[in-house]
Image 1 (cartoon, one colour):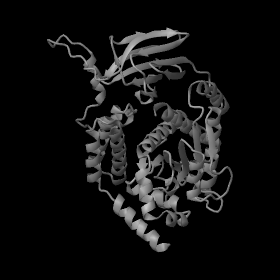
Image 2 (cartoon, one colour; image 1 turned 135 degrees about the vertical axis):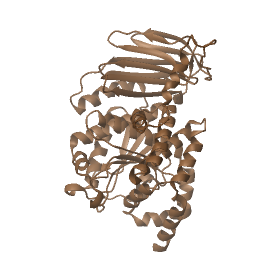
Image 3 (cartoon, rainbow, N blue to C red; image 1 turned 90 degrees about the vertical axis):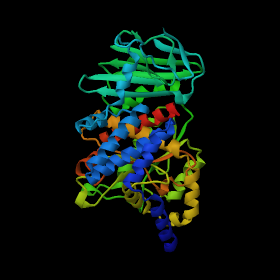
Image 4 (cartoon, rainbow, N blue to C red; image 1 turned 180 degrees about the vertical axis):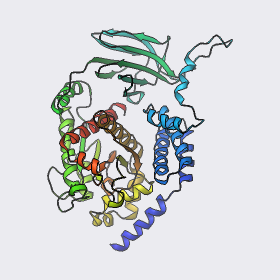
Length: 470
C-alpha cells in the first residue's frame, strides 16, 4: 500500500509541477482564444498567478496577472472592478476594457461614424411590457448558455445593478425603458456579440426571469425587507418553484466526520462540526427552493471518500458539492484566510497541493483503491469544464452575499486540485473551502450560526446561477 502511495505522489508531483512562466504562457494562450471555455481557463490561471504573486511579493507577476484577470473577466462578464482599481493603482499602462463601450457612440470628428459590427446570429425583434413583466422577443430559439445574469452593488452611489448579458443583437438603437418604482432600465448593444440589459435602482429589487423558446420574460419588483434567514428562504421559494429546475438533484458532502475530525482550528473549533452545520443550512435553503437535495452524512459519522461520490452517482446527482474548512500551521495562521473553490483537474498550484494533502489524509485506503491508472482515467473522463464553471459560480455567490454583510471577506480564488473526495464523481464536482479555521477572525465567523446561514445562502445563489446559465 505504502509503495503505491509513494508512486502516486511522485506521479502527481511530476504532472502538476508548473513554473510561473509556464502558467503565464498557458494563460496568455487561452486568453487569445475566442472560446468561452478557454477564457474561463485563462481567468483561473491568471487568478492563480495573482495569488502566487501576492505570496511571493512579485510586483511584476502581479501586474501581468491583474491585466489578465481584468481582460478575461470582462469578456466573461465577471465583476472585476476590484482588480481593475488595483491595477490602476500600480500605474500600469493597461486600460480597462470597459472603454470599448465608446464604440457605440457617433462622433462628429470622423467622417464616418463607426458602428458595432454585429456578429451574433440572434436578433432582438421586439420589446414590450406585459402583465408587469418585461418581454424580449427574439427571432430564434434561445439557449440557456446565451443568457448570463449577474448583480452588482455600487457602494459609493448606493445603487443596485441587475445585469443581463444576452448573446444577441438589437435591430434598433439603445433604448431607455420605464417602470414605476425603478430608477433606470437601459437596453443597449454592449459589444458585437452581446446585448446588455441593465436594471438600476437605489433599493434592492426582486428579479426573476424565465426563457420560453424565442422569448425572455423578466419580472422585477421591490424586494421585501429581509430581517431573518427564514424570510429570505421563503421569498425565494415561490419564484424558483415557478421558474427553475425543480427536478435538479444536488448532493452535499460535509467533509470529514466521526473518527476523522478534520482540521482543529482557533479555540479548538473542529472542521467536521462547522462544515456539517453549513451543509445543513445549505440543504434547507435549496430544498425550500424546490431542489431535490441529499447529504452524504447528516450527523457526526465517518464516511469513506469513495463512498461519498458513489452515493452521489447512485442518486444520479446533477452536481456534487463537498464542503470543507482550510487550515495552516500556527506560524502563518493570522495571515492565511479566504474562501476557495476547487475542481478536479490534472493541474494544480503549490497551494492546492497543500490543501489536497490535508483533505486527502483521512483515508489512505481509498488512494490505494483507485491507484494511478484509475485516477488518470477518472480525471480524463471527468467534466472539467462544467466543474470549473460551477466552482466560479459558487465562489461568486458566496463572496457577493458575504461582502454585503461582513468586512474583510477575501477571495482566495478558484483552483484546480486532485482531491480524492471528487474522484469518481460522474457529474460536475466541486470542493468548497469555506475559510481558514485557523485564522482568528475567520474561525469565529465560521462557528457563528448567522455567518453560516449567510455563507449557505451565497452558495445556494451560486448553484442557482450555474443551473440558469448551463
